[in-house]
Amino acid sequence: MTPPGTEWTRQLDAEFSAGDEDALAAAYRRLAPLVFTVALRSMDDRAVAADITQDVFVRAWRFRDSFDPQYGTVPAWILGISRNVILDTLAARSRQNQMVARSGAIAEPESPRRHAREVDAVTDRVVLDAELDLLGEPQQSILRLAFYEDLTHQQIAQRLDLPLGTVKSHIRRSLAHLRGRLGAWNATS
Amino acid sequence: MRHLDPDSLGIAALDEPLDWWSRDHLDACSTCEDEVAALHEVVSLARSGGPGRLEEPDPAVWDAVAQELGLAGTTTVPRLHAVGAVETLGSRAATASDPRPPGPGTMRPGASRGRRTVPAWWLAAAAVVGIAVGGGVLWAVQSPDGGGRTLASIELAPLPDFSGSGEATLTETGDGLRRLDVTVSGAAPGGFREVWLLAPDATRMYSIGILDGDHGTFDVPDAIDLRQFPVVDVSDEPLDGDPAHSGVSVVRGSIDAPAA
Image 1 (spheres, one colour):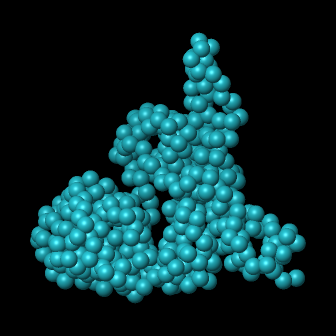
Image 2 (cartoon, helix red, strand yellow):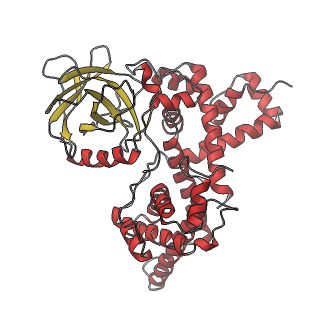
């Protein structure tokens, strides 16, 4: 399986596992924006998101012995750690809110399962954003117009001055590509 | 059995209306239906969140990681997106098996070759500095010479180790075309000056033309979304016939313009 991210390689997986600090730096470069963005969208607090990002990479390095490059990739593994750290942080925040709730200020404790669903959904969207950013042009513009501006393929062809057939073919191929990329991220996490 | 035209699968996944034959076929054929459903997952995921951009943590976060782990040689901040090489839009389009450049434009035909690879981090680092230094955006309703509506007018600020300055004005002409006027001052270039529109992270870019001395006027093709490529970059290019960005940017500024 191709590891997630065009600039991540199997070689880096092996180097990370072997304790090469350059591979950690490479992982940070490639993944810190993803981890930070997922944390930020989940916690809605930049300082907390920065702490989570730090924690995730510290843990990833300390526990690298439990990462096996035969069975997974560093990007998927780090996103898994990120999920755990965010869920722990959300749980701690909930406990605090519950204590406040008992004192009468806030009601409704949040369920851990709901947290997990939400963090997974946020992670999927952030991974999609990252993969969209990696698409070339005009594929990226075509999909953004279709996704976010709800234009039909005829309108997109007109807007970008591309032949209708080219737009249709880019839509199908890019959707299939993104689906494959999302699968690659999820398969080993 | 005749199946859906492959490209109609994507159209269906976007919830666009299909012709009657395709609709009937989708109702009856589980192969095509599954294919559409799989692509549709991507579509609904994207639409569930709206457009979002990745954000980068403060550089202090890496310092804290390195310190907490007591890393030996890696005390410097790794540049985010440091891996990979700058690709011109043309080179990506070519690898995506569609050699047609996006829309009519002034992209040089040779731009798709991109032999010289510039480390992306160099440009990206410069981008951050350049935008931070870059002057304020000045808005006006009419351009001074009356030659169309001014969409944005910006100062171009020098990058570290360069002097000089410049300005860029984006206008919309009477017939709806976007035109970029670029003027620079400062030391003569080693080779020639080329004007680019960069994505904010400087990993993607268009060449829009070559400055004749200190000045140039360029049509901006409709296909270029200035929200995605807002950074006006002037580079010093050696006379080596290589169409890729030299990595030597002289002045920059960012257009905060609506995509006209």
